[in-house]
Image 1 (cartoon, rainbow, N blue to C red):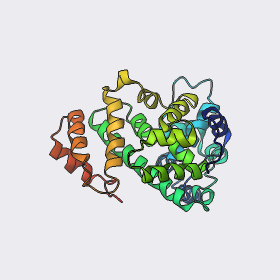
Image 2 (image 1 turned 30 degrees about the vertical axis):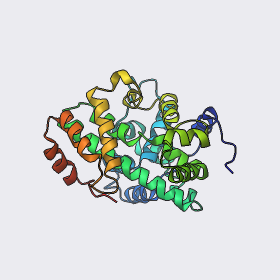
Image 3 (image 1 turned 45 degrees about the vertical axis):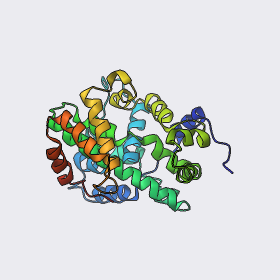
Image 4 (image 1 turned 90 degrees about the vertical axis):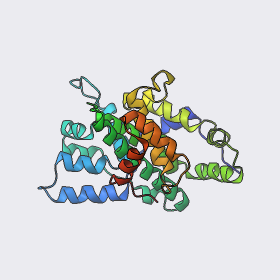
Length: 276
């Protein structure tokens, strides 16, 4: 029996003040950098933070809460955010605690699902960033962060609401015709897409993330970049034999003006191409 769930508004209110966790690897790497002043630089810290979608989300939420009057434009480049804040202030105000692994210690099935979602987000971000550079996108960092956070709401729910999230998966396994949105509405009372849209707006996440939900912008190069990167990461998560991948290669080829065969070679040789 699934317990009565919070409404979407109640979840947004709760998560607005909740302590977003970080991956244990992130906390460990930040500790190592802090212990070595020769390596403790904004670039090195940014590389660690930007590899963890939850830590990136935590940093951007903090930035919006404490937006400075002299800040004239939205910052989505993690290194720029850290330079503006200062590294000592970052470690003090946005600590890499609690740890995801501790929070889900009693929900190991949910932890596995969360870590798989994180891995897909990392892959999508790297793909999107690489393609943005090839397209000479002057705001490639926004593409990276947007791809990284496309499923931010799902990650938060795995952290803070693991039981019902596992129930959604159980129902879909029991009924192969049950759509994700329908299962989510049955268990949570709202869909993941609705939640992601509200989270993006309420937390003032990158504008590109907001644009993903706008049908009028679906054909824009930057929106297509993010969505194709997310699709490729999902379809290749378990290997390179997914039936959807040839269509992905064709669509990516249209974006990059490359032949599908060249796209396949490109994405499979990138550092993040290992699957499983």
